[in-house]
Image (cartoon, rainbow, N blue to C red; front, top):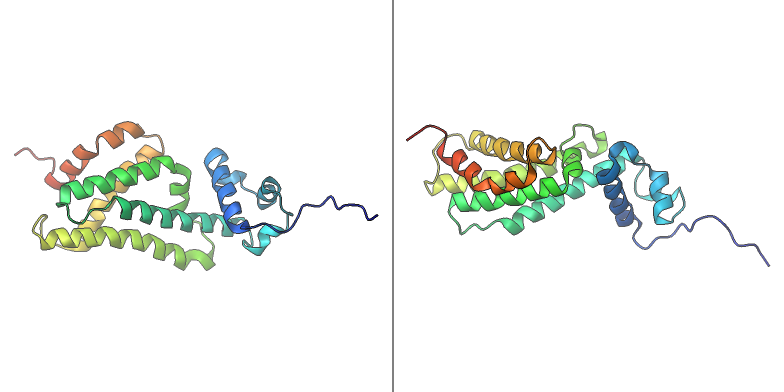
Length: 200
């Protein structure tokens, strides 16, 4: 009788998804520095060479995680968006959804906005980021058309709104602001963003 091999099986039903799931778990619990394709292969029960079918190296895996994060963020925002609402409640709902995504996926959000990416993935990463910007730009443009916000350069207005929302999300995700307090304060944040700080 031939002895049974002690090596791990190469085949996995959906290896790419399994690797991404395991990688995100490691990213969340231990950080990007702790990620290892060999360790991930061992964790999910495949040969150490198997991940190479989908990811040429660790950076390729990180880039795939970031792109997946952008897809999930877009889905989150699309679900939260209600184009029938006036701007303030519409923006409030989107901000709350973005904050929750950021605080639930802090390490992933940091990875998404990292400047360190493989050159092969740079265009995809830029396009993914641009999609999120354009979704906000469309809301700003619609609000201008309805007379809900001032006239002016839509790109600058989009940058102003985006910087404020991403800033509070980053503070909450990184622990510089209390996450629940940030979520609870979304109504005030959006009100101040749209109406300003000057007394009336």
